[in-house]
Length: 283
Length: 322
Image (cartoon, rainbow over all chains, first blue to last red; front, side):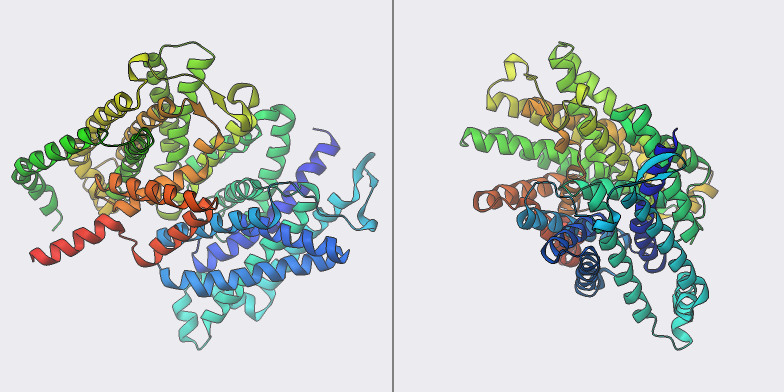
């Protein structure tokens, strides 16, 4: 693989990390498999696109996408998921229903055309990296991925809230018994994880573009990342994203039509030895 | 406690079989007469109900009896549809040979899915079958030279003698009857009882010396075979296949039909399929937003009637009997 292809794999991995880390935060702490996550990504991308084109500001687009998706997350968690707490199958199917609803809603609002989020002037063009010209915007996405990873790592490992979240993953009742309002921590996690999907939508919308089946594609990749990395593990998501990102790029170079298949093989081999993923723990 | 269901089950079936046979016979007579008063369009809908009922039943074998809900069965179903259409259009196979190829391909794909999925349970099983199904969808969308991409493929798959709506309906009805009986026998066989044991307690079955992964593997593959039969019939019904046949929505609709009909009720699948297809047709008469309505239906069923229509009726009946 050339430097260009490796960089493309890394930037795709960075985008996947932003999306999948939100997915795994919710999965790990709340035990909710939010299959609407892909739809939240796409919806966030559309909202971000609209805000960014109307205001001419990429940053406002990001803020708008995150705020809108956090609001949808609030409705989803407090309005619907509260009725099916503790039943994983019902949660999975309910969130799938929400995904169908959101996809159709975005088809009504934005139609079936594909959109590309406009990139701000300073991120346009290319620059020389290791002797290859590479788009600055994609390097920015790579930087954002690293930034989100560092931020999440610090949040989880260096703050009181992070300690509560980690404790909540292991034993929610114990945390509750020690006088912490764990429900609020849960809600915060859900909103934050959703907002990350919205942010991913805006970021991805600028180089993958947004179209009606983009949600299913990003959801497949996110699932592969989480299946490989293991439930609720930040490092697992990072390594899973890197693997899936690089394999997908490799696949597109080697078998352009069957790129999906290339992530499937390693995932299969891994699952044969570690059914819970690289960093997954039995609960 | 451990052994009671296994011991009592055959006697319960034997006790019920006389009545069950009469009911099954009556249902068949009614179903066979059904197309006579109906229009061609309505016969088509009834055919669709039978085909998707078979798909929903194949999901129920796993969900209701082995405790593993698959979100990849739409893809297995669709692989069969693709292979039947492809082998008719591009390879020029006869309908019967194409049918066999489709079912074989679906069984093969199911066994690959099964190899990976039997090691997992609960949410991981859902996630994995979902991801595997989406990979199949991705391949069908992207592998344009073979699958026709988004445009799909067309072929006249139906054999000449089944060209009329009624003839095809009767053929599918006969197929559905055979498949239903086979599935019913399967879940009530000692093998099916073992699957139920695995659903209730995997560790108990393991310590009793059962090879749990092997049983799940066989259960999944058999279920995939039945989904393949449904998919091949769907190819003949539609004479067309496109990525939407293997899409997640197909798996999800199958699961919804299974749940609406009642998890673990097997024949409820036809009730669920009829309910969902009727809803789809009523809705599409007024609006194009079928996906939205499907999504809302899903949310409402999950909140208010997770045990499904048949399950709810059965619950009410058994309460009355008691």
